[in-house]
Image (cartoon, rainbow, N blue to C red; front, side):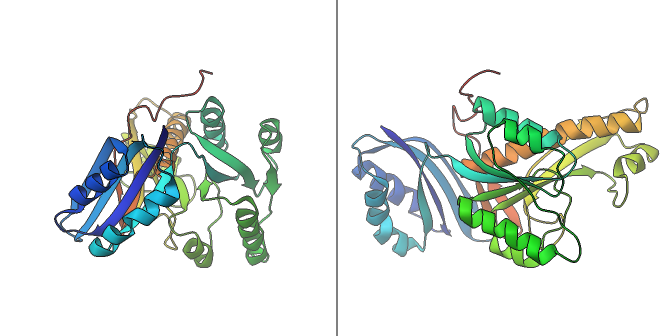
Length: 294
């Protein structure tokens, strides 16, 4: 039996859940997991349904059959084969903690993705990437060549069929044009503090202010730097006895975990854009399981 998921967004009204469940049952499908959210503020409805096709109904037939109900409810919807791995490009500069964490999770199957390329503006991680049998591309970026560099990146996206770009501490600001082209398909990670600190060496600034919480935020990328819709966040506590170097090390750990969880939500179609925010549904049972240990 093939495992599928259905994602739905539409204006909020009664009867949506009944229409979808009745349709799937009629197609010989058994729902194994379902999440929904009705946003009273925006008047939008969001739903994600995991199911198995016990009658062998294929994606094309499922999609065509739902068209009538979709028009009646004004739905945007998509069926996805849960066995197909999303094609991903990872971009990194000189901080490698997130890249190395993602490579490990990918290797053991904890992140079921197809890494089609790693792009960097430095050569630091070429050997690490090539040793994983993943294509490595060094694309230098300067103020003068930025349009050409981004054109090369977008060409790789087209060539590889990448559906998602992950900025795993890629320390270059993307252009508004690239952000628009890849809207909802670029995920970034950055540190976060209360109070917040910008500019050089934010961890040292946080230490000097006696910060007690170090956090990380992963979000979709927009033209507004670090202001895109948030997918995942977390924090870790620090004390007065820890050094600025401790802050950096602990911050790297939380950044790696938060980025991995954000990617997990996206590749399993659990994250929905909702204006300047997101709707992120809980993970389906079994979706965190690894194919192998270590």
